[in-house]
Length: 173
Image (cartoon, rainbow, N blue to C red; front, side, top):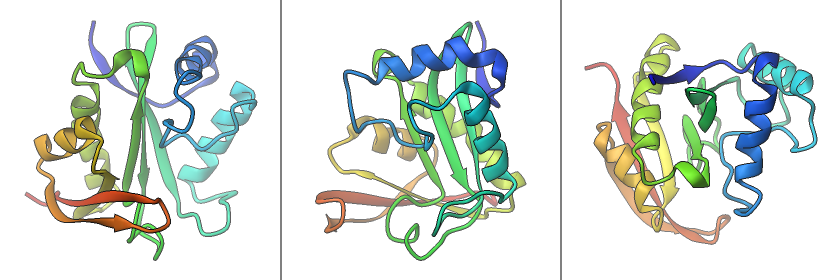
């Protein structure tokens, strides 16, 4: 089966529910998906479409586009691209945030999903993508580095209470 990034539609209701349920045993690990867990598929699709067009953004939010990594009938990951950086995103979060469902980790999903998302960044006019991750999240920083990420810093992040790695991926090459 070919894995690819997909835009969420109401046809993905069962797949989305299975994807979210995969995180039930790993609370706090779902990054890049900002809808309430209780939201209906219609509410989620409406929110994601609005955010990508810069509508109905929360305070301090910037326009963002969200895709899911789908293989067969399974959503394995979610990736969110912020169209530009706010002052807060310049410190943590960056242009791109993503999560891989716990049952699909350590299979190269993050690396492939991030690689596919880079072309979307280029279409949005992002020349250099800023990404951050927890220094202990080896899978994440390896995926970033495999996609051309160059570490800028590794430092204590007070708000997140963790050591954070910050990366840049040059996209104009």
